[in-house]
Length: 524
Image (cartoon, rainbow, N blue to C red):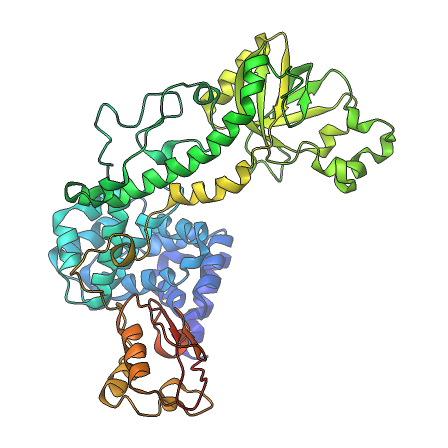
């Protein structure tokens, strides 16, 4: 058994618990970094009973600069290659960095300039990753990134990989900065219980107080984005305003539908509610989900009906569940995640989404589950429902589900891609080169534009470009963004990652149209 096999065995033995990590910390980390698949390795660590604690102990046993420049940064760099695992990778990294014993030492050595090229690159990549984590408190890492000694060293590094990560960190910090109108009297916040200065705190599902608010919503003028005085906050301003404008489109449609309900309590025969109306409800309890759903299902309020649903007329008791699942009318009845409003004693009480539980809908009398966003609103709704004499639920037809995914992405967005090249490009500023250039292709082609590039790309047929086509291809490969137009006949697309196996280049993109003298040609 060679050394690599022995290290792999030691790694697996510690994960299984048959060997204690205490005496074999270094061997455990060496075995970890030798795994073939980073994603599979991270999954094994999380799934193992001893994995997370073993990694945590091993990464803290030696805090010397030698360890951090060597095995410590090697392990972190290896784990970061599994960046498509999301929360799973977050779990492993946060066990290493919290409490911040290793992290503080890592930052200290970087600040002192004691890290080598590889360790500096890993530090920058790790910091950028930590700032981009979703649904995690990254304030500690934001504060660290804002420190002048850290930020200036990142941006002034002589290594291209570190500078590329520094640019990403700069963009992330820009999106999280305070907006330009946050401190003005006309700015956001205070109009109702869902109006906040930080748009990331706004509930996408509106509240009853918000629906009934008559004050004008806050929006920015487009000219603000071109104002030199707001340059430091314009990325945050852009995301904030885009979110508010799109959400206002959703609210306008919803308010228009709810207007007759609120004006006449839904009794206007000419223009009543478009969705299902259920009257005579009473609170029956709180839905917490089944054992296998509890961790991913938000609590809901169970409302019991006083009479059976009319839609079940002439439907046998044994066929009720099948009717809700397969029948065209039944499957659309109280659709899952559709928006509904609760009206108590003639007043709009709350808005929420329907959790469609067929097991409760088929009962006699049936029950409906509605989920209310926010703990405060949930408790307030429960208290009001207990004291209400008349409660009814009105399902709306406003397509909240078509707005919510985009709004959710805007709220969690940490980076706006190509913001300097497209969104906020300024005249006179040159387009930057990608952090990783493909000199294997660009250098020979620049020297001899008429050369056969078949050996460079490994294509099955010969490819020779004319002068204009060679310039177009070089421009596309040497700039982060390029738009190349030409006559129809040739369609070539070099997309991000197309040559990643050969060239390890993932951040350039070219869309190329043109023709060769011999007719249409394809590069890839």
